[in-house]
Structures are given as C-alpha cells and as structure tokens.
Length: 152
Image (cartoon, rainbow, N blue to C red; front, side):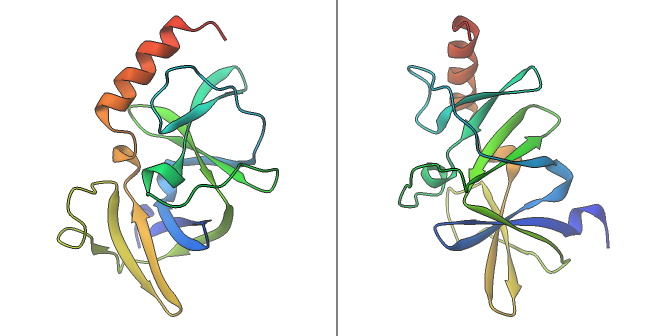
C-alpha cells in the first residue's frame, strides 16, 4: 500500500465521500464563518485558523446536493495542497479506510472532474473527490480578487 491508498471518509446528506489523506491537515469542529460579499457561490466564507484566513468550500453546492445549514455538529476538514489551503464543510467524519481498489470515474460522470473515482465497499459505494479540482480556476481567481480587497 502507498500513502495514496488511504482515504478520509466523510458524509454529506447521508452519503459517504472520501478524499486522499495526504491532503488532510486536520479536522476541526465547525465555528462561526465570516461571509465575504460577492464571493463565488461555492465559497461559504472564511475563518481564521491560527492567523491564516482560509476559505470554506460549500460541498453541498459543489456536489449539487440539497443544502443544509451548518451547525455545531458539522466538521471542517482543513486541506493543504501544493497550490492552496482551504476548508471543506462536511456533516461528519467517519474515519479513514485503506484501499487500492479505486476505479476511475471517467466515463461515469462527464464534466465532473472533482469526482476522481469510486471505491466499492461491502455496504455501498464511496465517491472519491479530487481535491485539486474542487475549486474551479475561475472561482479561485474571483475569490482571490475579492479577498485581496477585503480587510478582515
């Protein structure tokens, strides 16, 4: 097994999703979010994590799921890639799994680059998200343009 074979499993609207653990910095409880006027719809707002302002991606909108209000029971997963750091809001974190059986999602979903693959589990499917493609380039550019003008 390689480090790329480990996935953090979380839920949204009762459905299980996963991300590669190599991108997970940590998981925290949800906190109050500062909204940013005119930010892309996919950005819920920002929070300050030890002096670093991080955007929060609304996974419900990204995955076209019926939305819910963020509550105290939700979790924030802090993600760090080579290009950026950000947070995804999830309902709950179930733990991690180890699997080298991920099947590519190409051909199953067209124009949905942020779903990287599928892992078949004994009790259902786990959709694996491509962290590098969750925020579209134009969304990131718009967010960076706005945040550079806003004094938090």
